[in-house]
Length: 183
Image (cartoon, rainbow, N blue to C red; front, side, top):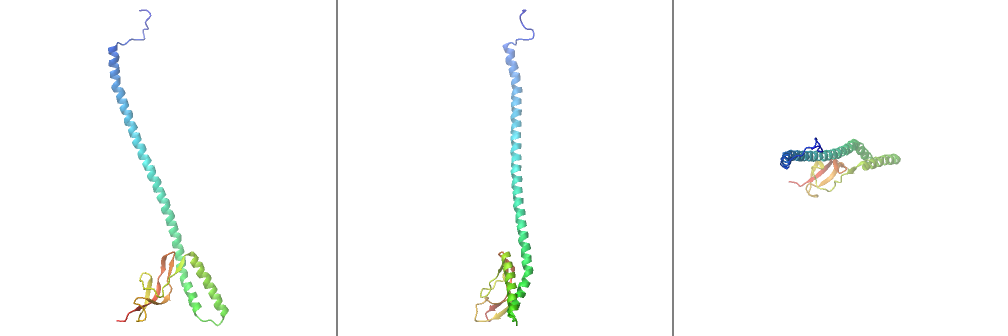
């Protein structure tokens, strides 16, 4: 027995099977634990990915909403400016209708009116066409009702003050004279 290594011990086959069986539940438990950990990490990754996608969508929606709000604000600011300029435009229209002794003065007023009107049209001012149209209380303000058989009922006979749209939205209703059938 002299050539045997004292540190190396031989395990009989029956003991090896028992040791393997004892290690097998440990190995199965480890595999089960690792599988559970993998599943938990995969679920956490999916949740984080979902959160990331939601946050990206929320940010994109916020960016769009902020851009729309900014655009609406700029449009509203322009609308308020044009609304403030309408009385000036009305005054120029009245000045053009009045007679002047000096034709050069009348021509100057007309040129100023034309330049102001064109500038406001560039910004988005659109005049309302009312004569001969049917009265619509959403677009017109009836200042006078005239009983007549010569025009259709609720048709507009005249305009006291022109109405305007600003970029398709009603800016100021037209003040009109409306025909009504006699009773």
